[in-house]
Structures are given as structure tokens and as C-alpha cells.
Image (cartoon, rainbow, N blue to C red; front, top):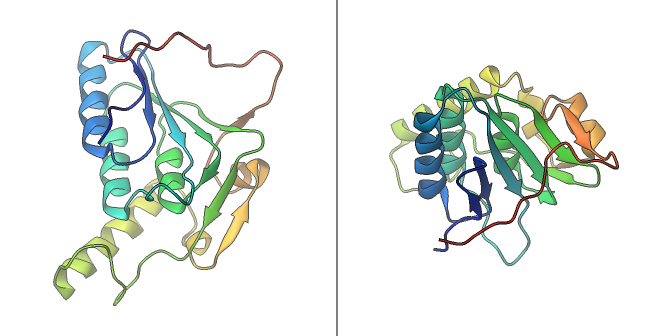
Length: 181
């Protein structure tokens, strides 16, 4: 597992894949440092060669984001998978999407589906209930996750997955030099 791209002083984190525990800890750490300053979380789309974010990890990250005092700005870029779309929508600050990003939505697990763990039927019902509660909290329609579909940036905004696109000549997010630690 690699360390995520971070800029600790500017409060910028980047969610790619396989780094959920690290991102969870870094979000909590940044929140304790100064809960009035926003934290920026980049949600970087996956490719066929990278594993998708599991639904369990997405629900965990959404819960952490929603529990912090610091506003968490999210910025989606690339080909965003369904679970990444949940994290993008969970932002409590601005929720940006790059102009040419695509959000790929698919049916999410329901009763009787494999949820990525070998739990009991009771655990699956609890997990399904948590997923439905998260959709309600994020003000997302459950119908978004009932059929496979692709949304462009404007459609994602219309469906409350993001607030606005980044497409102006002067980006609203300033680039900084990143140092690996």
C-alpha cells in the first residue's frame, strides 16, 4: 500500500485506492489541528488496473467526513466509480468536479448480494440499512444506484453528487508543490 498524495500544511489529501485507513487517520488529524480551516480531499477516478473502493470503505470515509468539524471540500476527477461518487457527495464544503469527469453509477448491493465480506445475512441487512441511511443523509436518490449509467459533470451536479465544475481559466483550487514524506 502506498502513501496517498498529501500536502500536510495546505490540508490537501488525495484518495486514490487502497488507502482508506490512511485517509481516515489523516482527515481526523487535520481536523484536530485546526477545525475551522477546510480540508480538501481529491477523489481520483480508478482505471481497469486499479481496484475500486469497496462499499464498506466508502461508507466509512463518508461517515468520517460527515463527523468532522472542519469543512471537507471534495474534488472529483477522471472516471469515478459508484463508491467514489458517494465520497465525492459526502463533502461538507464545496464539492467540485473537473469539467470532463465521468461518474459511472451501477446498482449497489441489496439483500442477497455479495457485499465484499463473508458476513451473515443479519450483517447484510444492517449494512443495507446503513447504505440507505447514508443516501438519505447525502440527499441522493436511491434510483441513482438502481441501473447502470454514466453521468457527465452537469448531470452529476443536477443529481446532487457535486456542487460545481472546475472549468474556469483560473482554478479555484491552487496548485502547490507536494513533498513525499
